[in-house]
Image (cartoon, helix red, strand yellow):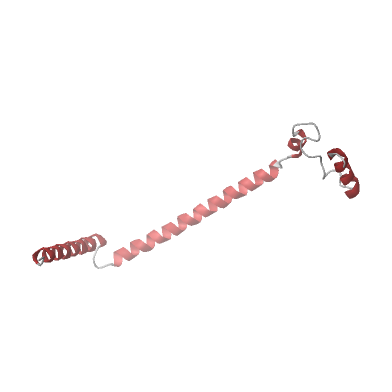
Length: 113
């Protein structure tokens, strides 16, 4: 049985891809220094992606504002066309509901055995 270094070297020789195969953690003797050095961030792509995401968010907010304005305008137009204002209609229905409730409660009290 071969140790880890020999096995990794044998794999590198067999495949010919030395850069892709690295010794496992602990085999190189370092505390992950090789792994930290291999992480490279392309800041240009990160900045470009952030700018595009921000612009997309602004476009979405603009669309939401336009849709809200159209909905508010249509609602105002609809309320103006009503014969009875919504507040008066709500008061009327509330009075009917109270009358029905009190009539039901009094019938229940009077007809109770």
